[in-house]
Length: 170
Ligand code: GTP
Ligand code: MG
Image (tube, rainbow, N blue to C red; front, side):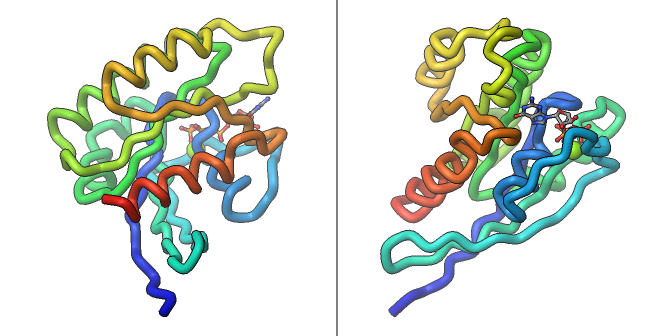
């Protein structure tokens, strides 16, 4: 019997880190160089089959611009999973990601599966945040970490798969 389990998932992170691009890659298998900045939030849904179970992700792709910060609780409240995204070429976005983790840990649901995504992993030459630093932070704070690239598709399906596995185990 293949049951479908719904999982509300929210993406949080600084402006232009690639939240919408990760979702576009996962849902449509596409990438665009000139992705428009999100206004408010955008909704997508995508199913993922794992062995004999299916997870239906209900995805809220939030806007990173600071003026939308106050809307975020509407999207992370009750979320089964969160992907907190930073850009490996921009240390300020890593700092912002840590603030999101703190906010989720203090205001969110204790059972939310949290993933830290170091996006734009294709831009190796411009890297400013090491994978070791991010991995250490993730371990200390109970998240799992992956570097992703919405552009080349590296680890995009993998991060959603890992979330689905953890969600189904919970
Ligand atoms: P807001 O909606 O404003 O919060 O931004 P966002 O986090 O949704 O970022 P978005 O997906 O709009 O991407 C911002 C820019 O980064 C776009 O020009 C994308 O093409 C580019 N981009 C996103 N992901 C990647 C990636 O993995 N590699 C590279 N090289 N560029 C990327
Ligand atoms: Mg966006």
